[in-house]
Length: 96
Image 1: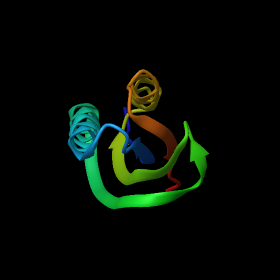
Image 2: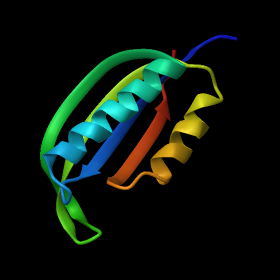
Image 3: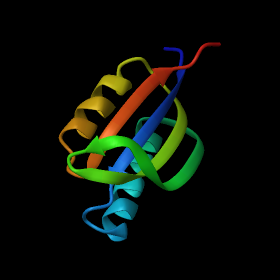
Image 4: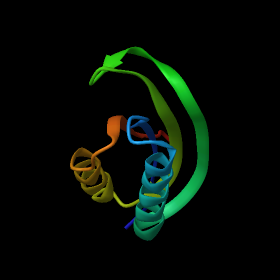
């Protein structure tokens, strides 16, 4: 099965502190590397949100490029949705 290239943008909550953000960063980079090939990881850091999400005005941004089979992004999205501390996420399949 051929690997497809994907990009994910994650916005973490800062309400539980920097330690929680670091734990979430490690959790998702480990999960991606176990199920595919981890590419470039960009840490944008703390930024102001365009609009408040859950009464928060700032979030911690992270962008990850990775390659995996077509079934993993659905599982990754499921894990993101049940993880406390993730404000927003977007997984995009990148063109060839």
